[in-house]
Image (cartoon, rainbow, N blue to C red; front, side):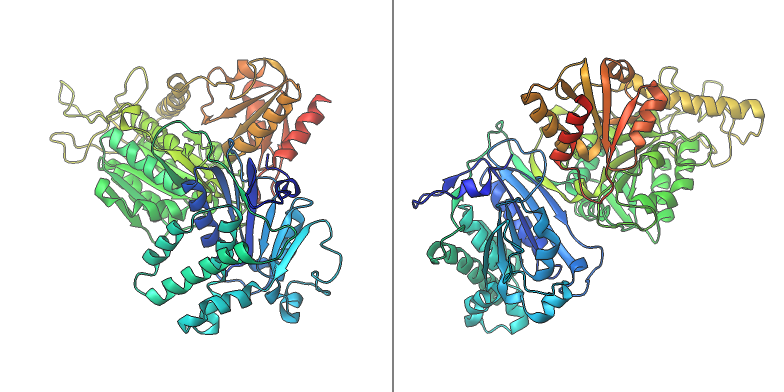
Length: 626
């Protein structure tokens, strides 16, 4: 837990005070560069050896009206010398670049926390746009917090004046001025950021120098300004970590790398067919940079073309992959049925967002579990996996590739907007850590000369994979029901019953080839188990840790394999008196658990577009055990 801010800054000497962890939120207009500022502060945290987790929170509009509350963009980072699992419940420090940013974020700030405010933006027009009738800097509405308000805009203009920039261009440097002040506050080195600026603006050295000057000016302001009060400097030690090579990774980056690794382990080239949609687009962006690893990326004209191109690639002997978010997954539904009935390997990445329909494009949610498990016409089962964090995306993507190719089936991989955009440190694994699972293709017809594309492995029920062009292996597959062995069109009732049963049995049988469910934290029996999936992992884990530290009998189980569920999960859950299921929907996993295991799982639901706070789950645990 972050150290209370008023306790952090009680040092009166010249040495930085010490803290275990701090939560900082940068907030401003969507044109103020808050995501870039947060990203570069994250880089400085990584270079300092801190553990961290981030939460970028930005509007859906490409450019909302300037100065309005619905145009506010924010970036939160929780960093420290201890194990960090979430982006933090409440900021210790809020940097507000205008009245709208202050209004939308001040209530989230911890009582007694520090708000650094650009008073130069608090003119009558901006106050009116934000809905303030009275300037909050002049009344007592901000009394619960420590306030440091000064004219950052004027300070920035003064810092970049020697470079001859216009007023508008000069003010674009104020995020760097603010970043410089933050680097000073947290005892960070500026050199890596200045090197980054030189690279970013290599074609415009004047802009590079101006931004570097703003960065240095903000840092110097912290060093020399006689402000007093809350603005002090403090230091956070590096977090303990096992030896290895580390890098910062977002969920989108980790997924892309995992998909490439999975294709390599399967011995297949990868084809990625996608249509841009928030928050799934980063997977396409990152894979487009990895062509040297045998990756073909195709930006299709629509969602249906994207998935159908990936299915075609799988038919041709590639690993077909597609991605989208909830609305796009709905459009892909019929084609998913095509992949299921043709029994071709396909990885479908669903980066969930708030719904239904267009819903909340840039806000996170976990409301597509029903869609993933049940959401197709006919009896159309497929494998469903979920990721719990940005770094976990790598391993889950590899597992999705393994299951898709080894069982000749589509696999849906559920992530969400929080995971896709968030960042954390990742220990890059060795290739020796993963066992290859080479794809196997049919090489010729049966002994009697017949081609039977739906001949199956007796253990896994996997059908054989035939590459087009294989000599003497011409065959037919398609969306109409086919005969059990030959794949020829067949409308017979008994045949359809048999094929439906086989497709179901194949997916149900996957449970024998996945790990048994483990308890992430706590005991295998007890009074209460908190069961989660996806991005609720960090908040649940921290809440359970805190409750166990106070002597409460509570454990944590987190599910990666959503469908089929692990074979031992029902028995494990029945070992607890009570079951609590926190999820960012109206109770979808809870319903699946009740249906499959007849257990009395209780929901804890949140659909605000924001992740769970640790305290919300902690309170629910205490209520269940009261």
